[in-house]
Image (cartoon, rainbow, N blue to C red; front, top):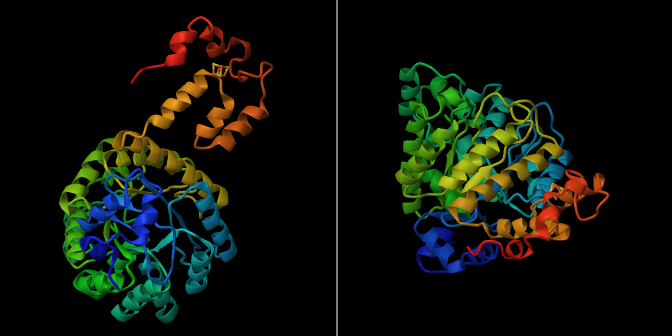
Length: 434
Ligand code: SF4
């Protein structure tokens, strides 16, 4: 069985490429060509048909929603509901990141319920199983680790964040740097660092990278190189350890592609607004434009409760400079396991960010122009149709309906648009000629 990348290199257009093209302003041929040169991927799995979306250069910025149990809250039914809510709210992909309860069973339920392509972080389950078996995560064996990766691939996972780029060299950079304001915030990354220190060994995911790649190729799953040392505080942005890991991940992305595997790199994390462009450009330049998957990024450390907004600001900027997939952040970030409402808010905020980025990155502005005209014309049905969240817009206006039906209760009879339209009807009708 050939991967999407191997087929693209032979000039083949797969049914997954055709399906992905149906939600883009690009052809299946374009998607094939981008996959062939490693600039796009389609999360896929030979054992499960998820909705095919292409992630990468010249394509709409995609939104990922992550769900999953914790050690405190492990209700499988709720996680399935959250998965379905994320899909309905418009997420393009889903990540199932459970660490509490029966992990194989939860993943199977979510994979069965969702139509989306589903990703995972296998280190979570690997370390959870080591804790269960030995009461010590550092007793995890290499075979247990590779077994979990293979098991999750065989079960139908379409993309996986695997922390291959944390090496002894990365840890040396961290040590020599001598500080970390925000510590290590990646769950998988921190456990892998702990394992490497306790066992005084190199990361097996780096040392046996070929073996990792061969498993992913077998199932045509996308290997997403995890950002285990990502900054978890604005003041750690672009520090030496993080950049060292990024260099290694970009190198591994090229090696994986040469082997015929679909590859993606993960990014931070917490970044001030003016570091985002540099971060995206570094990843793109060093990886030869492999798809970039950013987590947020969160742009201020002091907005807990509204971190979906802080992250949407960063994600819009990242998308504008070329990030290809945005992982949503919910209002519960840093505070609690997200509930269903948090998931919906998170997806909506990330979708706005993706759109704002694409207006610059891809020039997708036509819908905004039509909305401008609908607002000018007080065409309320048109506004509901063109809006990303038409139902929400209708609900708010109807909850405070105006005396004059054309307007809204913001200005009522002082409606600016209503007042001048009759005097300037001709120029207002035409609008700009651009
Ligand atoms: S009433 Fe004010 S806010 Fe409402 S449509 Fe008219 S100008 Fe816009």
